[in-house]
Amino acid sequence: MPMQSSMTFSSIVALFSAMVVLASIPSVSVVAVSTRAATSGFIHGVFTTIGIVLGDIIFIIIAIWGLSFLAETMGSLFVVIKYLGGAYLILLGIGLCRSKAKELETEEVIESSLLSSFLTGLFITLGDQKATLFYLGFFPAFLDLSKISYFDTSIIIAITILAVGGVKLGYAFMADRARLFISSKIRKGMNIAAGCVMIAVGVFLVTKA
Image 1: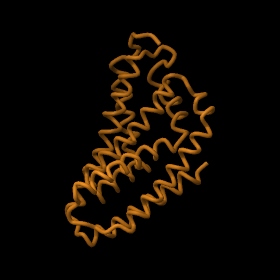
Image 2: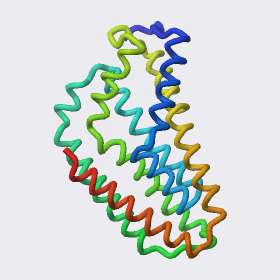
Image 3: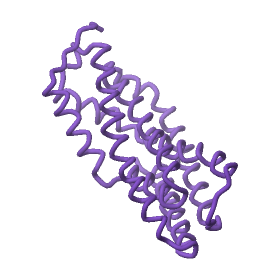
């Protein structure tokens, strides 16, 4: 890979704008971030977002390096990830449905569940093996993958963090603000609803083609 940058300022702005729009579209990841923030607080929405962004970065690196064959040769691994991720989200959903709404959470509970929020976001993203093909088809509209440099790769990763991460954090913030005005009784219902959503997402990951 050459070390020179093949991206112009206009292409950077265009790519950033496109990724913001794509990240803003209601999707499974938006639902996951919103439900985690609404039921457990903003920090959980943050960790879910981190998981989503990390999963996107992994697929982006694969696409940028032209390793589309990796998705094919690792097909069985993607299937394992998909089923593990789906099972994990189903168990998480069941846990949410059975949990009791609390006015205050202890530091221990928060620390032990932040990992689950991170894994929720990561598994949702890694469970979609079509993401590699999406990025392979998406990036050529903004840059020449045959001439891309390591510096370009860093720029694209930074754009992803700012665009995707920023939008998802916005959803998390709004969901968390709404949670503060909701009673514990209603929050219990939200936990059940969020749990059902997580179970549905898990089933979706397991059963989709």
